[in-house]
Image 1 (cartoon, helix red, strand yellow):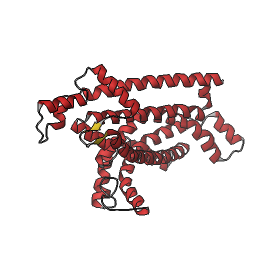
Image 2 (image 1 turned 180 degrees about the vertical axis):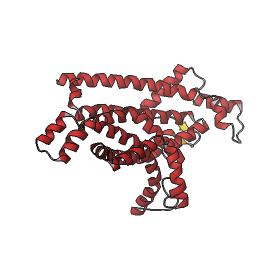
Image 3 (image 1 turned 90 degrees about the vertical axis):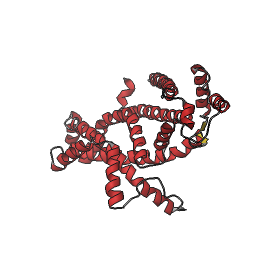
Image 4 (image 1 turned 30 degrees about the horizontal axis):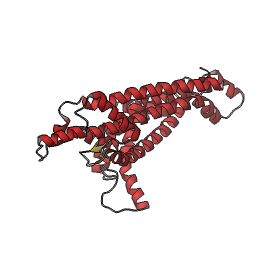
Length: 327
C-alpha cells in the first residue's frame, strides 16, 4: 500500500511539473504579445529623448535583440536564480518589489479566506442540517443573491457606505503614511485598513462555499451511517460535525482546489479597488507601464502560488477521505 501511495505522489508531481513548465512558457510569451514596442512603452510619455545609442543599449539590456529561444533561456535562468531584472517603472529590482508586496497580499488573502471558510462552513452545516426552516430559507436567498455579485462591486459599495458616508474605515491603502505608528498602534492601523478589502473578498468567497456546503449536507443527512449513529445514541453534535460534516466537506475541498485561480484573481482585483499595496496593485501598474521584467516576475510568483495551493489540496484530500488512497 505504501508503494501505491508513493507511485500516486510521483504521478501527481509529474503532472504538476508539466503544468508548471506550460505556465512558464505562457508567462514568457504573454507579455511579449502585448502590442507596441516595449522601449517606446517605457519612455514614450517621458521627457527623455532616446538617441539611437540609448535605444540599442536598452534593447541589449533586456535581450530584446535576441531570438525568442535565447530570451527564453535568459528567462529560465532568472526564474532559477529568482533574479527577474530591474523594474524601470519602480526604479528598483523586481525581486525587492515583489518581496515588499507579497506580505500584504498574503495578509489580505489569508485573513479573508480563513474568515470566509470558517463562517461559510458553519452556516452551511447548520443550514443543511435544519433545512426548510426560516433561517435556512433566509440564508439561502441571501447568499444566492450575493453569489452573483462581483467582488469589486461589493468593494465599491463598502467604500461608499462604510468609508465615505459613515467614515468608519479608511478608503484605501494598507497603513497611514508618515504616521510613525509603532507597536499596538501600528497593528491597529493596519487592521483598520484591512477591514474593508477583507470584507469584500470574504463576502464574495463566502457565498459559493456556503451554497456548496449546504447542498452537500443535504446529500448526506439521510445516509445510512447517520441513521446508525442516531440508533447508537450518539449526541447530535457528534453526528452532525464528525460524521455528516466530514463527508459533506469533500466537494468543498475539491472546489477550493479548482477555485484557487479565481480566488487569486479576486484578490488582485480587490487590491486595485482599495489601492492595497499588494501584488495585484503592482501588477496593474506593471501592465499600464508595459514593465516586462516586473510582469514576468509577478506571473512566475502567481504560478508557484496557484500550483502550490492545488498540490496541497491534493495532499490533504486523502486525509479527509482515506478511500482516495486506494483509488
